Length: 358
Image (cartoon, rainbow, N blue to C red):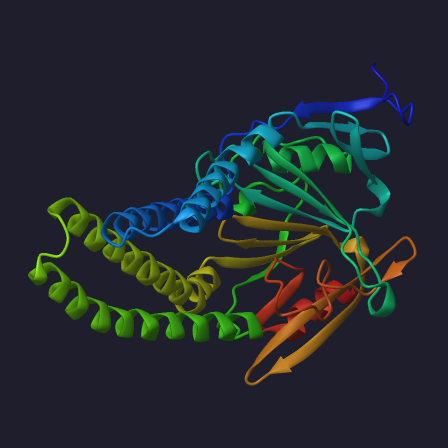
């Protein structure tokens, strides 16, 4: 059996990042940057041909946006194509060339699985370690990106024989349990929480919508007067109208996206969220995300009433760590909307509290 060159431990599993595509956030950055580049270049052509003034700054800005779009689209794929992952008896190792990161298996508090929206058999496996709050508050995690069967890999990391249903997000979470594991309690959130980040996003979306309405009301009459004056050639007129139209569409799309993220997406995620407590673990499914937590890691169970519902926080325990920052469970920053071991907006907190405290 092969051994790792740094720790000298027996290698249990070894794989690579499949690098299927760039992440969604990078795709959005690439599209927005490309649109801004095209709009800037069109304005530069119209200004220099009609007013005969230098537009070197506008051309430079358009080139910078084009380079940013290309980098956001291709750089993540190139970076991930060289990633390698190794699981030994005691460590999980992430490496790319001479760069290496590792985490001890015994220090892993819980795992997050983020399934790919394009391939039901691949996703990211995020290994999170509980850290103290206060002055030592920080995030300690290791992400294995674009691996095949991330839930199956998590079973290998835990030292559990992977069951046959593992390896596909199409199967419900309750059907992908360990051998001998059974569900003791299950529930779903009855409401979606308004966090500070959600409120700010809604405000930004409303502000962008007002900006779009006012910009459209002012630009249309001005463009109509310019076209009726025949001051520009047909080609330049088309480029000017097209640039303004594309810019308005981009502003409208950003406003609609912010409104969707703030008003629609949280409610949809709440409807697609399910909590499970088994005889061995705590499992949470939210959309394409899954959280798996060994019950032996739970130190305290805190019931926090919220209006007519309850939020149940699971305070985790680990080597030299108790209570968690945003990377864990109790408390956390509203700006971080990552899936955490918290049962939000449930009405049966007593039952789950008795089960977890048993």
